[in-house]
Length: 81
Image (tube, rainbow, N blue to C red):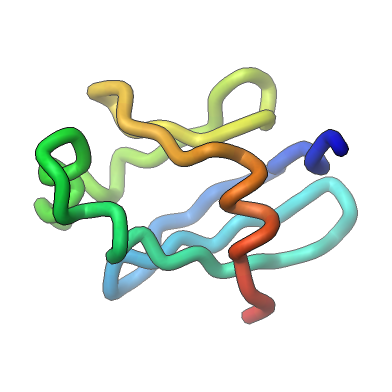
């Protein structure tokens, strides 16, 4: 199943991002479990964490050096605010 398009991503405190979907849903997603490995360790820097942005016309998110999280994980594991 295709995930709804993400309209907005906003970095929050404690390595959490807020996602706004085209359906009107708002979801919170904790990135904390992902930042232990070498690929994601740059996300520990709060300044770098804030560089999160939309990619592929709202079909995903990424950081400036290419780290990303699968759109289905963001949607399925995100929680309501």
